[in-house]
Length: 392
Ligand SMILES: Cc1cc2nc3c(=O)[nH]c(=O)nc-3n(C[C@H](O)[C@H](O)[C@H](O)COP(=O)(O)OP(=O)(O)OC[C@H]3O[C@@H](n4cnc5c(N)ncnc54)[C@H](O)[C@@H]3O)c2cc1C
Image (cartoon, rainbow, N blue to C red; front, side):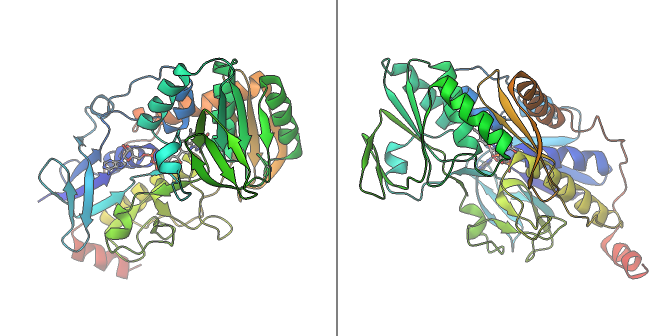
């Protein structure tokens, strides 16, 4: 019987892991199934572009994986039984697995009262489309409040301000906005916010979202026609309900090989996994970390199934890229431990680099097997694997 590998989620992490496993393992030995609620590969890093009114390229998963040996199942995952090794699906028979790669990603945080009822989001495709429809109904001069001071807030605010110059866009952040970046990059951000007419309110803690805007910690009301919540991401509760060891934020705790610390046949990658980063801090939720996590999960699982050794070198960072509308961006080189360096590209050059990186990430998912030589190894029977490892 073939070894059944089920990969949950076809975002940057899941799709990458599935493609890489197909390249590493012999087709006669494994059955790889990729489960996704969405029939397309969704470029989540472009959701602010979708919200601002741009059309994104469709990438049907069945076409991307045609001929790779990966079976795509377009279904909603509702639960995972890690003892029975079964994945429950909303509208299909349960899927049994021998190895599982969990990569269901994340969604927008909703921990502040009123966010669910009144705030918009750019965390996923449906949310971005709802925001886009709402923005299109606004009269000139209407206010859009973006809550958050991180990368998503900056990208959403600048994209919306550029696409809708008649709207009044404000960023409200608990601390600073982009204040982790090098001073050069921060200076550039301020110039761009001025150019696009974006108002920035720092050190403002939003404690509630209402129909008409937000209420801050100082009990001040800030009016808005549309509030967009970008202050953090959270993971689906499915992981915590499985019995796998999860962090206090519900992410599956994995070791440096992306293997669950509680269930060795389960791997996790991307936003849904909490993996050790280069300085001991968990790798942050990002495409930048999610893709190498997926490579690692696939390589480690393939190595263990074929009697090899799983790679254990640390995963780190190289750069952060923040789009500032379509003609500007910040490319911030960072150290392996994610500390900003003085290498900063901005303006059109920054925008070209950012676009190259986004397009490259999607291309990598769509061509999972191009850049890597095919080495489809045979699976070694469990007892033979153990003998081989013991002999090392
Ligand atoms: C607007 C925006 C801009 C961003 N910009 C950047 C950036 O510039 N750089 C960067 O590094 N990161 C960026 N990020 C973060 C990045 O998009 C995420 O970290 C990344 O998408 C995580 O990849 P993932 O594969 O773990 O999850 P996702 O990409 O979210 O993929 C999850 C997959 O799981 C599927 N899924 C979820 N639930 C279920 C279910 N119950 N059943 C079946 N399938 C399910 C989804 O359909 C999807 O296929 C940005 C995020 C946003 C929202």
